[in-house]
Image (cartoon, rainbow, N blue to C red; front, side, top):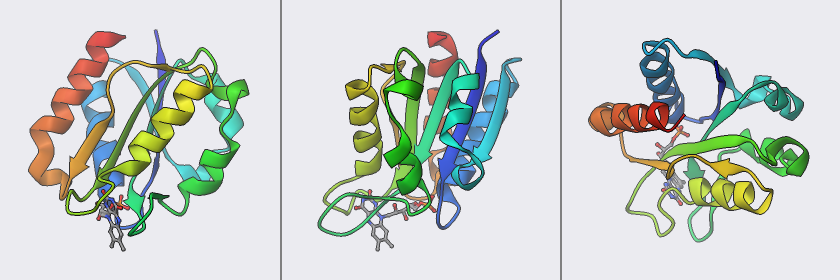
Length: 147
Ligand SMILES: Cc1cc2nc3c(=O)[nH]c(=O)nc-3n(C[C@H](O)[C@H](O)[C@H](O)COP(=O)(O)O)c2cc1C
């Protein structure tokens, strides 16, 4: 069975909430899943899992900034961990900003450049996760179907 690791970086808890919703939805399908804060996850640990779900919110005003905790993790991501690995990306943002969920795009770009395999299009949550419940659970279902 594919082992799944969710790693998230979250400042005010929104992306953490999405990570937890995804974890529950995927676990309910009998999938083996681990969910961790990026602050507790050395990059090398990614090699132990078949599917990675990378979650990061977007900050900054005139340019894309990844969530603070996620920045060193993002910088350490390279072909040794990403090449050939199945990955999907999610994150929270606010569509009133120029780069809505730009962190999701930045991580997806790095995955593609490093030979990772994006299983489905990234999930971009606008505003409160509770208001996007259906979108989040549908994304988890789409992901499970793509495995
Ligand atoms: C100063 C500031 C800058 C932000 N910049 C962006 C941005 O460029 N793009 C975006 O989509 N959201 C932006 N946001 C919205 C946050 O990403 C959003 O509040 C998100 O839910 C935070 O998720 P987190 O609690 O998981 O960190 C910004 C919020 C603040 C307060």
